[in-house]
Image (cartoon, rainbow, N blue to C red; front, top):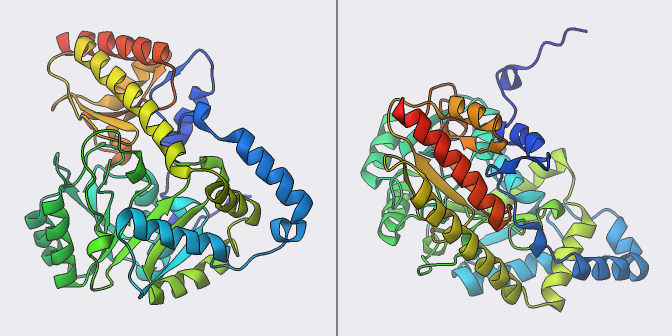
Amino acid sequence: MDFVFSDKMAKMKGSAIREIFKLAGDPNVISLAGGNPAPELFPNKELAKIASELLVNEPVLSLQYGVTEGYAPLRELTKERLAKKEGISSPDDDILITTGGQQGIELIAKCILNEGDTVIVEEPSFIGALNAFRSFNAHLAGIPLEDDGIDPQILEKTILENKNAKILYIIPTFQNPAGTTTSLEKRMAIYDICAKHGVLIIEDNPYGELRFDGEHVATIKSMDKEGIVAYCGSFSKIIAPGLRVGFCCAPKALIGKMTVAKQIGDVHTSMLPQLLVYEFQKRYDLDSYIQKNRDLYRHKCHLMLDTIDSCFPESVSHTRPQGGLFVWCDMGEGYDTSLIAKECVKKNVVFVPGSTFMVDMDKPCHYFRLNYSTMSDEKIIKGVEILGSTLKEIVKK
């Protein structure tokens, strides 16, 4: 039959990154595109041991329905870790375990947004969040991202120009796709402006524990005295993404409504992955495991940056992240990296063109994103060399 899709979904497009993943499955392709953690770091042996014991000794707990809010010991452990690591400890907040960090963003949008409401976003920003907001027919207002975060003055101007501005979505630490970190001064100003105007802040922080250079910067949520920040986190980047276990820490009233919304969607996050995440933290030293991630990503990031410096045209600039998984490159005005990406596919190198992360995805874009976490050292060097030679050819023209 000919389907007539809803207004909310008719114009939605699949993630370009997911399409690129299909190419990345080819062993001949060097993928600098994805945002996957390094698979060699997965604690598969530890998780296999835990899973085996759970299925034998706790089959009902592992395989039966659970409560929507999440496995209570995991929620409590997550609260303790947030208080210890991030200074997030308000008695007015609660924790909801989500099916990946992405679900937390979508649930907040479902609970807060009416059609036509404005969501203010960094530009560029995470495609998953942008599409979540688009699915509710929200208006997206982008603020250009600077090396140290968005400009607070532009933020306030944008709020004043959009009377129905409901949400600011921000990834202040090792931003996806840019890899940048918002300064403490800007975080404080951003919080004050949103508190002044009654705008909810979604602070998305899936990469915060992957800092390998520089000094820790306080989360916006740790400053939250007015109950205006919903903090989304995930175990995807620090244990394993396939488990799909994330969390949201937000005021109890919001968590309560998100819980109802989650019941409509998936009832609860799968119990076995929740138990695996909980038991892994109880039995093993999570901080030591995360340090292994940091050490590897420091090496891979510096290797990519050094190769970029030696192989890219001087006219192409790029960020120098202190953590996370991404490098953001700028070819300058007049280039369309979507076209360049197609040329590189012919040479078995893939990356993500910048248009994917923009409010207007159809507009030509001169930025592109590179990832350093998944490829071997040899493939990082070879991929960047091939990309660099292609860029030099295009720049000459």
